[in-house]
Length: 44
Image (tube, rainbow, N blue to C red):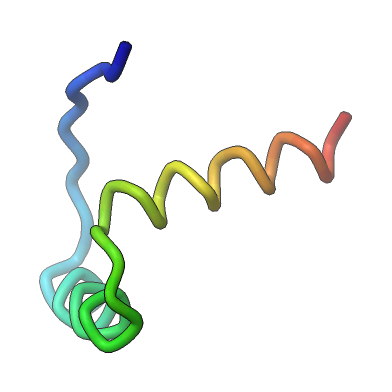
């Protein structure tokens, strides 16, 4: 089950990240989820 969340980030950072994701054919939420999982794996 997916959990809806809300984040606050700098506008220019979000715009660049959105472009990055679109160019790679992915959703921002999917990429953020992968980054979260990767970060946790590094620390465990």
